[in-house]
Image 1 (tube, rainbow, N blue to C red):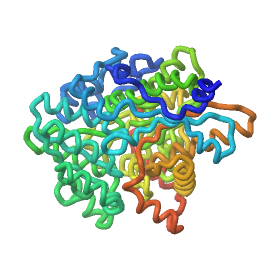
Image 2 (image 1 turned 90 degrees about the vertical axis):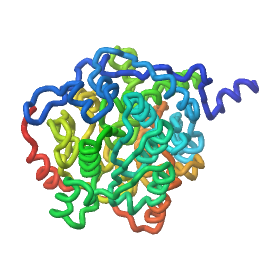
Image 3 (image 1 turned 90 degrees about the horizontal axis):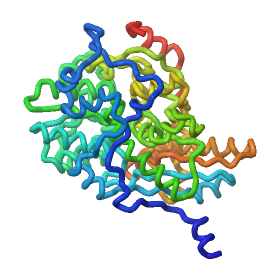
Image 4 (image 1 turned 135 degrees about the vertical axis):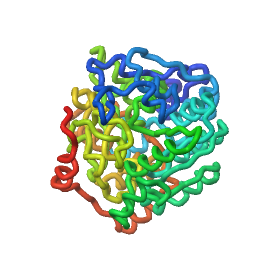
Amino acid sequence: METTYKKERQKRFILPEDQIPTAWYNVVADMPNKPLPMINPDTHTPVTEDDLSVLFSREAARQELNTTDRYIPIPEPVRELYKNYRSTPLVRAYGLEKALGVKSHIYFKNESVSPIGSHKLNSALPQAYYCQQEGVTNITTETGAGQWGAALSYAARAFGLELAVYMVKISYEQKPYRRSIMQTFGAQVIASPSMSTRAGKDILTAHPNYQGSLGTAISEAVELARITPNCKYTLGSVMNHVSLHQTIIGQEAELQMHMAGEYPDVVIGCFGGGSNFSGLSFPFMRHVFSGEKKTRFIASEPASCPKLTRGVFQYDYGDEAGYTPMMPMFTLGHDFSPANIHAGGLRYHGAGTIVSQLLKDGFMEGEDIPQLESFAAGQLFAQAEGIVPAPESCHAIASAIRRAREAETQGREDVILFCLSGHGLIDMASYDQYLAGNLMNYVLPQEEIDKTTSKLEKII
């Protein structure tokens, strides 16, 4: 009887070290319809490994275009650093279930336990490693809320690289401690748009008070990488190789759900460019492709930046200045200016090519979450589970709460799994604004979407 009780009430599931995955899962190999290729904006021909390796490390470029290998080995130096914090816990949210008064079982994969407090380190470490192996000395990147910048700052230091980070200006001002973390690890941090690049100068000339976007910051980082000797660009979301690296989350979660004796009916992740959603979802999604399971996958995005639910599927640039290849994506247009919400990591105009194809084919769905609902969900989660979630993660929590209440109304007992992509201990200024009643919901007018998407070249 005692053993049964302990099994029923077990809260945290952690894998032994020898069960930490040794390879990443490449979902493209199993997709019924492969994503359309990235293309050169001048010739409209598919980009090659050589094209991409001008910007990225050669291995990242190779992984980006790999459509056949189901599993790609994790380099041993990367796996050794993974062991500092992996496996991350799978946690049964008994407190949240009780607070909601629901019969559904809610689990979360707690990526906030990494050294920098989010899932972003899962891709920062291999990207830095690949650059170091190629003899690169300098890397550049952009960051929104600062979680990717913090992760790459740590990874750059681990592999002896110099790093310059363009941080979206509104987040640079809203989240000074994330900037401090990056600087503590030795990175140079520049508020974007800046006067240090042609892209930044052009944007500031046209819009002197512009508070920035991830698209703008990407333009600046790409430009710096192009003009700096022995320098490569690294990216924390959107790209296929980033989603690949993040699949360690879902592979662990699948083993841990087996330890818990359950399997998710619903898998949820917050959504900016797609990294943590992809990382958790893709390993489970392969069983839907094969017909073994009927799991529902939900990407939770801000109502103020609704590329999945209200964007168009078209080729678009990944940055504002048009420096990147063109990608087939659900997009609001690369010159879309997002509202200054506090979930800075979700303020991106487009979705990755893999996620866009999966959404188009009906294997997943997007869900818009208003800002006030997301913070209310985050506060309830903090009170019930003792963890203050990042504003980005609050969107996934809000969707999980919706699903649990929906199941209760319909008389079901669902198993719900979401990714807690990061903690919010460095985002308390955002919570201050919420608790003081200073935040508001912002729903994007359709005319704004029409204005930016109408400028897109009609390739599809």
